[in-house]
Each structure stands twice: as C-alpha cells, then as structure tokens.
Length: 119
Image (cartoon, rainbow, N blue to C red; front, side):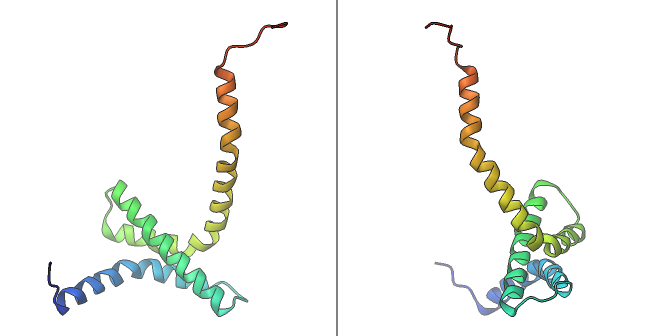
C-alpha cells in the first residue's frame, strides 16, 4: 500500500483547489446578481454552479485540446450560468426521456408490414 506524505496530500489538495477556483469564482459572481435568496439557496446555487462547471469544463477539455487559460475561462462562464441553466436542462431531458417509449413504439410500428383490409 502506498504511503502518502503530508506534502503529497497538501499538493493534491492545492491542485484540487486550483482546478475548482475558476468554477467557484464564476458561481460566486452569479450570486452577486441574484437578489432575495436565503443563505441555503445561495449555498445550493454556489455548489451546483461549481460542480456542474467543474465537470463540464473537464469534459470539454477531454474532447477538445484547448489552452488551460481558455478552459479556465469556459469553466468561469459555466459557473455563472450553470445554476440557471440546470433546471431547464433537467426539464427538457425529462420530457425527452418521457417521450422515448412512444417514439420507439411508433418506429417499431412503422417497420412492421401493413395489414390488409379484411385480415
């Protein structure tokens, strides 16, 4: 089993913080424009904005080779809009998934041979 020293753990923790900082800053900026939120709502908005931005920017970085500075800018921007866009995305995804059984059934029926009248 590998033994990790405190400097190794500290370096890993600082790397995590450096990766999360653009997303967290974007989410924090978006909070400045939201009025009338409770502290709980602000915390959830901050957490959702940070998490969504972090993972989506990593996915974009894995798909497209970008300069790290550009990727941080994308992460910051996603952090600002993630909380507002997430409910609309979830609603659209639920509608699309809910319509899948009907769509699949319609496709299967369209492939079947047509019945002739009287049979």
